[in-house]
Length: 213
Image (tube, rainbow, N blue to C red; front, side, top):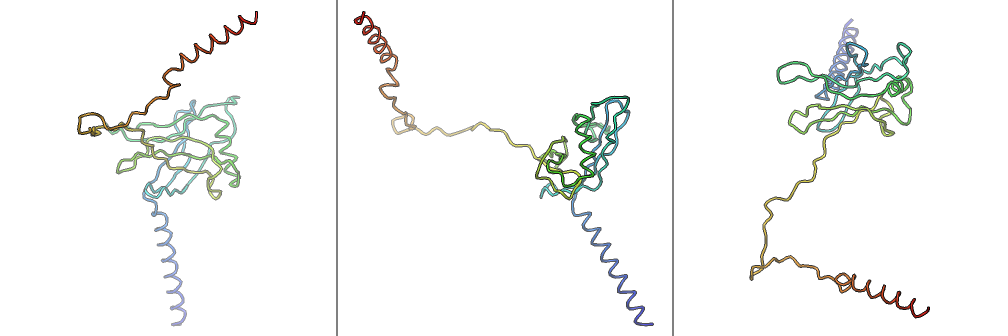
């Protein structure tokens, strides 16, 4: 009897450890985003994917993925869909942010769900701000051959690249006599008088033609 109780307690402890490990793994990625698809002729969107991600390590995981049906409605062959998410505006209202994709692109999503080994996989690109909260500010759909084959749809976290900045307050270094110390490259003779050489060549050509006549 004592051995049986010991075995039961051991199994229970293993179950608790497994649940804790699963919980820790699901919470390893600190942020998540709900991405929706929304046909232009429908009154409300539907959830496309729920994605967990770590903005520091750029690691991501697709928690759920439900593409729209591949069938068309009302005989339409190329409906437009919005791909995006909701964000909270300054006044507390919900604001839609997203981009447009074609029905054919979403049809590819449906086929892709059933074929995880497809080479050119569709990828959701999540654009994150460089603020301390790493807020999501835009989403788009593209194709990539480097997406994880184990996931139904690829995810790419993108930060904006900083543009070129002007060099301000650059100190001007002068020589002891007050002139600029930067060396001025002296032009060659041809760079200075190329036009004169060209005139002489034209005169020589035209003069040679006259003598021949």
